[in-house]
Image (cartoon, rainbow, N blue to C red; front, side, top):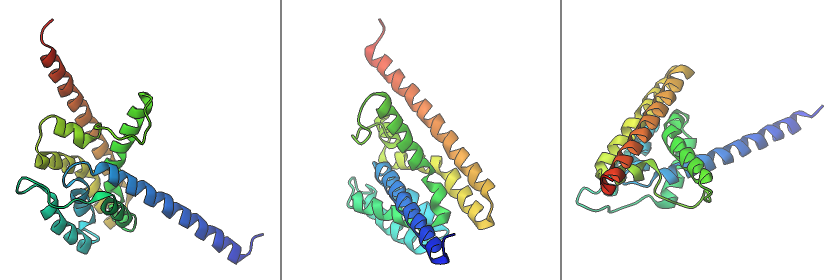
Length: 202
């Protein structure tokens, strides 16, 4: 039988591996989600507000420069910023449910790229924020819709962690997933209508 030291070392190795994988997933999800002004920063501000208020307050200061209040963006997260947010999410369990929307968006884009035979790492404009902007929505409108879709997982996730109950978290995840699917279906319908109108009657 393994000694206590060996067992502890094995458990620590598993924990370290889980943290590395979790950090990579959170960082990549937020990095690919941050393709609109205020997307990742706005989501993180909400998600970290209940349990990591200082970080949320700092992000509010950043959003003042990240959103195009005067017609242009003055500051951007970039890869370093979105990766730092991924670590902040990983270290804040109450914020984990807020990753639902970035993960859903990333999973859908990866599936589409694979179905079309394209490399999954090659960027495109198929993310939710890109498609909302493609409908002519402003940066603030895009951010507003992203916040609305993410709200069930953010709010109910925080409630679930506060009550130490998985059911609010699960309800929030299902709510965000439902809103995401409805949004994608609606956007696809509007895109098809635009194409039909551009082609004109035959």
